[in-house]
Structures are given as structure tokens and as C-alpha cells.
Amino acid sequence: MSPFILVLLAATAPAIHGFNVTKILGEHPDFSTFNHYLTVTHLAGEINSRRTITVLAVNNAGMAELLGKHFSLPTLRNVLSLHVLVDYFGAKKLHELTHGSALSSSLFQATGAAPGTSGFVNISDHRAGLVSFSATSDDSTVVAADTSSFVKSLKELPYNVSIVQISKPLSSPEAEAPAAAPAPVNLTNLMNRKGCALFAGLLSSDPDVLKIFDDSAEGGLTVFCPGDAAVKAFTPKFKNLTADGKSSLLLYHGHPVYNSQQMLKDNNGVFLTLATDGGAKRSFNFTVQDDGEKVTLETGVTTAAITSTLIDQDPVAVYQVDKVLQPLELFKPEATDAASAPAPAGHAKKKGKKAAPSPNADSAPDAAPADQVADSNTAAGRSVGVHRWFAAGLAAAVAVAMVS
Image (tube, rainbow, N blue to C red; front, side):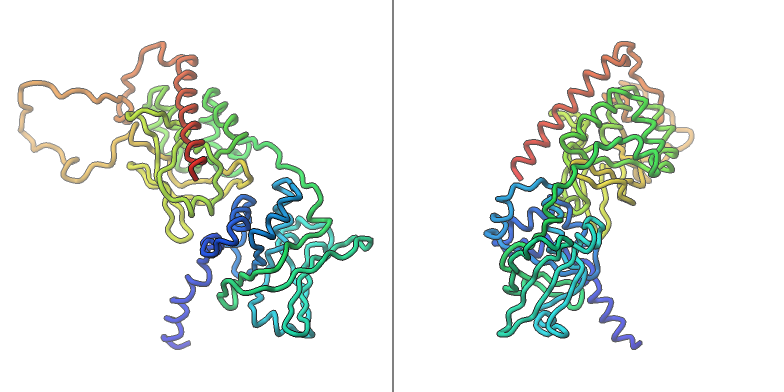
């Protein structure tokens, strides 16, 4: 292969494999509802992870017809999965089908959610340039649903990504069948099974903190659990924190809003945590950033990267990260070489007023905790403080959600 071709392939690869369906549809306001529900049902992330895909988009009027049936979210996901074909069909290909028709598997079929062969879509190229789409069904007694027609192409990246408009939503009895809501997630069991056993043990050792995580999971929660190797390396610092500091650090790994990985990529910026309160002293926030396929969390002390997904099932998402998240409120940023260099030998300390101690004992993690007052280390004392942070964090998170 010539060097010119290699350079050309390298230049075009990101455009093909780095597409974002929500950003593409975001350029077409008439598809805002369809776009919104691709995100809500987590289909956007599934679409973006595929190398070859065709999205049969429905405009806002068509989505109003579909939403009028008042499907549950799991059922709506199945119906919308019919609109995502795991093959490439650009406008040219649709009008040049071999023998005038094709049968394509949808995500409803490809992900195993469809019973039998009910997750396929028939595509037919008729005379006068008409192309129609219809969903298949295993039930022979069901009268075939009205077909939907090709309207126009919205975006094509041959021969990987095609987003086209169709005239009305597709559906089938199997897709519309009531789908069971996901079972509640046992966070510590999940972490124990998938590489975060040490972090799960820390959560279990503090019942007040664990209860906050479990309570949050009912309304929406994103957890960033450090892997076992990261927790093991961090253990000496963790042991030197006060009881309140330990609770704050654990809560810092939870965000009181559900976020799929695609939502994390789309909503970069400052994130509240379960440890966030309304005061200026203890903000306990971190910044989410993405660089292509990599999502990182920047605390001001550490930068951790998401390495795997333990679960992504609304209202709960749990991601493994490669480092323990260290908030600025508890730890000092790494010192520069000049600042950390030892004083020259033989130089005596100047006499005079002593330097004031740090107002936050937890900011010196390698020293013994200064907070040794008995009542502050009781379960009741920790519980009051923890619930105060949690309530404020939830309030702020709800405010952010309402604005967005």
C-alpha cells in the first residue's frame, strides 16, 4: 500500500468511526424529539459504538404519534431499536437494491431483545423511486402494519454511517409488548464481581455512606469506582484521613444524576458529587472531559480515566476508573519541583511567629488525622454531616437538570 493511501486512510478514519449521532441530529431541529429519546433510552451510545449503522429517523410529528401510545421507557427502547439497522443503506443503495428488496437486522434483533425473527426490517424499492420500510412479526395472525417511506438522507459517511428520514415510525406487536423494568442494582455485589471489590468494602464499612448511594440509585446515580489496584495503592492515604474525611472521599465518587457514557461525553464540565454542599469551603466537584473515546475526571489533584463500564442501566451507571478521585478539599495538588525541594542544609529556621496550621486537617493526608474529637467520629455525627452534603448535592443536581 502506498504512503499516500495510508495517510488518506488515517485522515478519514476519525470521521468514519468517531461520529456522534446526537450531534448530527442536533443540526436538524425537526428531529429533536427522536434525538432526545435516543439518549434517554441509551440507544445513542449503542449506535455510536457501531462501525456500520443506518438510523431511520422520525421527525417530531411522527414521534408525537408514537409517544401518544404512552409506552414505558423499556418498551419505547424496543420500538426505537427497530429504527436502527446494523447495515449501511445510503440513498443510492436504497434505490438500487438487488431484486428490489432487502431484509436487514435491526438493533432489536441484533441485541437479542426480539423474540424469534421479529426484529428484522423489510426494505422494498418500488417504481417511481419509492422506497418502503416495514417491521417483521412472528405472529401470522397480525395484519401487516402500514409501511413507512424514505423521505431524504440527513447524513452519510459511506459505507459506515447513514442517517435517513422515514415518513412514520416503525413498530410490531413484539416491539410494543410490555417490557419489564430493570431490577434494582445491588451496588456492592456488582462492584465485588467486576473489579472494584476493595472500593465496595470501603462503602460497606460505612453504613451511612452506603445508604446514601443506595437511596440515590432509585432516582438517578452515576458511580465512579476505582479498581482494586488503585484502591490498594491509595490505602495508606485513606487510613490517615479523619472519619469525616473518609466519608467525604467515598461520597465524592458518586454523582446524583444518571449519565450514560455518551451523556458524559456530550456534557463535559463541572459535576456535583454526593459530597457537595452549598458552602464555598467544601465544593467537592470535579470536571468531566473527553478526548475522542476517552473520558477523564479532573479533580485538581488527580486525573482519572474511565476504563470500563460495570453497568449502564437507567437510573444507574457504574464506571471503573484507574485512580482514586482525590478532591482538593482533602488533598494538596502535587507540589512543583521548586516548591518541594528541601531547604539548604545548615539554614536554621527564622525565629518569629509560627505558621498557622492548615484549616483542614484532611489536606495533609500523610500525617495523622488532627480531628480526634470523640463526638465528631461517632456514627451519629458522621450521619448528620453526610446527609447534609447529600441533600445539598441532590438539590443542586435537580436544579441543573431542570435548567437543562
